[in-house]
Image (cartoon, rainbow, N blue to C red):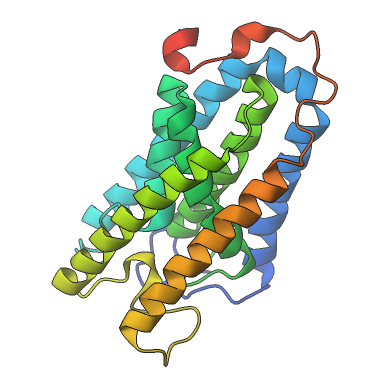
Length: 245
């Protein structure tokens, strides 16, 4: 058995026990949110605090591990992996309740679904980094569904284009930081696909694939009936923590 803090922990295999456990945990939580929508809306402030505190603990644990256990690596430890960026964006939404922030978090967070299907360089779930992966991706996937239930939120086309503009800015930063640190932000160094494709062509393919992913996410999310069965529930759940404190 590996140590919870072992910096040399091996990466999990595709569809191995750890991968299936992560998938099952998030799918079960997602099913519970959708099955108990009325109850979710009635306890929305508590759940909003719960999501925020869980994400905060995960962030503190993640960067403490990077700084004091694994050894700080500028090419891996910065909050520039898209999953880390997304977690921070959704934390901002939970605090402020701003839908424009949520939309960016939702569209960026679509990569969390892809990562769950095809995990890359992820430690086991009984390792701190594996636990961190599970928590951050669970928050990324569940918070937009939670917002749809309690705030009647849906992604918009305008939000899609705004989010894509922010993605292009993020992508440019990732390219620059990777060049300076020999980093792997957005998995541009250790690619999950098309390893032999020249860099500039891969960058264009990644940007095109991201736009396609955003459109797919928009189309699917618009058809999920998150509000069914909650009519007449407590509407005081709307807004961020600043509105519920």
